[in-house]
Length: 145
Ligand SMILES: Cc1cc2nc3c(=O)[nH]c(=O)nc-3n(C[C@H](O)[C@H](O)[C@H](O)COP(=O)(O)O)c2cc1C
Image (cartoon, rainbow, N blue to C red; front, top):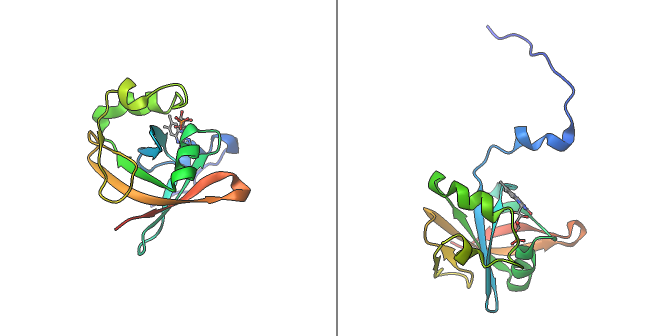
């Protein structure tokens, strides 16, 4: 038999602790000669077919410029063996650091987009990207089939 739960006030600014159960991914991107990687937790499936992912790549991130200019990226799914790289990549900027070199990751060729995939990740999903101007962020990733 279930019982009513006791509820407490909770600051909404910390709500991510309850609403972010999905996998943390690494988003790789390229614009002209520059490549980059960022850590992403704010993503969700929005449609099956054609496959659409909603996400936030904040405008302050260096990745945002590369993704906005190229219109593409790769969503890479890391295993737990990459946890140190995942945290490190999410705490520095590609405007100052070559993250493939600094975190000893291998850029691979995607068959569908110009952005490199990450060889050490167990899955890599190539995507076209669109931006929502009023949010000033990249917000939708349409997966290439
Ligand atoms: C676990 C984790 C999850 C993150 N999720 C996001 C996210 O979904 N969207 C976002 O814009 N930034 C997110 N970040 C922050 C970026 O990864 C971070 O600002 C990174 O330094 C951006 O790199 P860049 O400036 O080279 O693009 C996350 C960071 C961590 C550690």
